[in-house]
Image 1: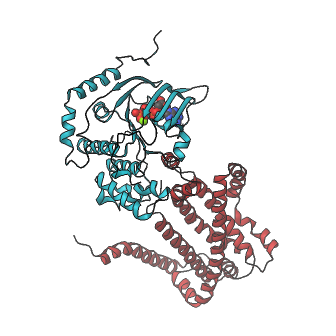
Image 2: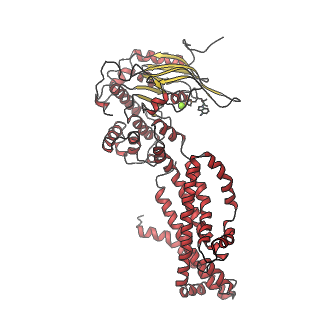
Image 3: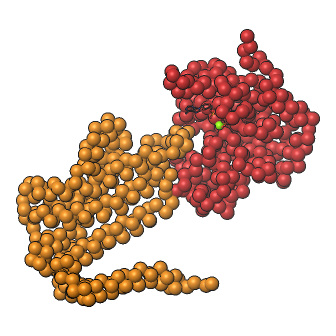
Length: 291
Length: 257
Ligand SMILES: Nc1ncnc2c1ncn2[C@@H]1O[C@H](COP(=O)(O)OP(=O)(O)OP(=O)(O)O)[C@@H](O)[C@H]1O
Ligand SMILES: [Mg+2]
C-alpha cells in the first residue's frame, strides 16, 4: 500500500508481462428469441504497466468488455485472463481498482469513508487508511469536502471521489469507465496528468474507456477502436509520445508539459488515425469480415 | 426579516392550536345551543370533566393498552425483520411465505381475538399482544423484504469488485439500504399495534385496557366517559407514532439508495 513512493525500475514488472489477456471473447445478452450480441470475437492483450484506451460509439460494448475483465460478468465465449490467472482469481485477490460509469458512491458514508472503503474492506488500519484518503482527496481537489456526503456534491465531484476510491488500494490494474466524462476541461487535464503520474509511479496497467479522441491519445500507449454492435475491435492505434514531461511527479503545473504534448506532431497524427478508424475508415487485420 | 427560533416555533404551533380551539368552541356552541342529546355527541366540557374525574383510571388503562401494543410491536417487528432476512437469503422460503403473508394481509386480524381469548383464557392479556404482533408482522415483513432487495446494481458490482465477504456486503450496503424501508414499516406498524390492541379489547378479555372501558362506559350510557377513554386511546396512538417517527427520522437522515 505504500508503493506510491517507489521509483519505477526498468526491471521486469513484478506482476509478470501481461496484465490482461482476452482471447476470442464474446458476450450475448438475452434469450434465444431476441439475443443482443454486445461483443464478438474480441482479442486484446494489455501488458503490465501499459495504458490502453477503449473508444467507440455508444452501445458498442466498452462497458461490457470492462465488466468481463473485472469478472462482474462472464463471457459467453472465449476467455479472459488477468495477471496469468482467471479474472475471478484476480477479483478475489483485489488485483484491480475500478471506477464505474456511474460514480456509485455509498450515500450514507462521508466522502472520506467512501474513499477509504476499499482499504477498510481489505483490513487496512485506521490511521494509514485516513492518510491515504487525505492524499487522494488532495489529488482530486476535494480536501474540503472530506466530511460531506455524496448528495452534497456535484456530479463531477462525485466522479472524482469515485476515481480516488479506485486508486485507494494502489492496484496493479485500473479499470476506468469514462471517469472524466462529467468534468470541465481544466479539471480533466489536471486529472489526466495525475493519472499518468500515478501510473508511472505504481506501474499500474490501465484499461480506460472514453469518448474523447484527444484524451485517449494523450493518455494511452494504444487506443483500441471498437465498431458498433456487434462490438468488435476494428483497429488498434499505437501511440508513441514522449510523456516524460507530462507525467513527472511534482513538476508544478503539469499543463505546460501537457500542452506541448497536445500540439506535438505525433499527437496530431495519432488523433487523425483514431478518428479515421472510428469513422469506419481503416479496416485493420481484425476488421469486419466483408464477403 | 429576522426570525428568532421562538417566533418560528410559534408560527408553526400557533395555527393548529387556534384551529383546535375554534373547533372545540364551535362544538361546544353546537351542543349547548342545538340541545344535542349526550348519546349523540356530548360536549367538550362534559368530556373534559370526565377526563379530570377519571384521569387515574384512564391513565392506568392507557398504560395497559400501551403495554400490550408495545409488546406486540416488539414481538411482531422482531419476527418480521428476522423472517424477512431469512426470506431474502433463502429464495425457497420467500416463495413459501408469500401466500401466507398475502393471506395475513387481507385477514382482519382482530377478528382472531375471540378465538385467541378461548386459547389463552379470558383473564389473560396474551391474546391482545398476539393480535397486535400479528398486525405488526405483516407490514414490517413486507417493507423489510422489499428494502433488502433495493441494493443498487452498481453497489452490488462495487462489493464484488472489492471482493467483500457476505458479512461485509451486509454491513456496508444491504443493511444501510434496507434501514429506511424497515423504519417506514415500523411507523405504519406502530399505529396498527395500538388500533389492534384497543379493538381486541372490544371482543372480551379482562376489563383492563382503554378498549374495554370504552365498551363498558358506552354500554352504561356514560357517553362523556366513553369519549374520555377515547381521548386516552388517541394519546396512546400519538405517543407510538411520535416515537417511531422520531426513530425513523434519526435512522434515515443519511440512508437510502
Ligand atoms: N445487462 C444487460 N442486459 C442486456 N443487454 C445489455 C446488458 N448490458 C449491456 N447490454 C447491451 O450490450 C450493448 C453494449 O452495452 P455497453 O454498456 O457495453 O455499451 P458501451 O459501449 O459502454 O456504451 P456507452 O458508451 O453508451 O456507455 C448494448 O447494446 C446494451 O444494450
Ligand atoms: Mg458504457
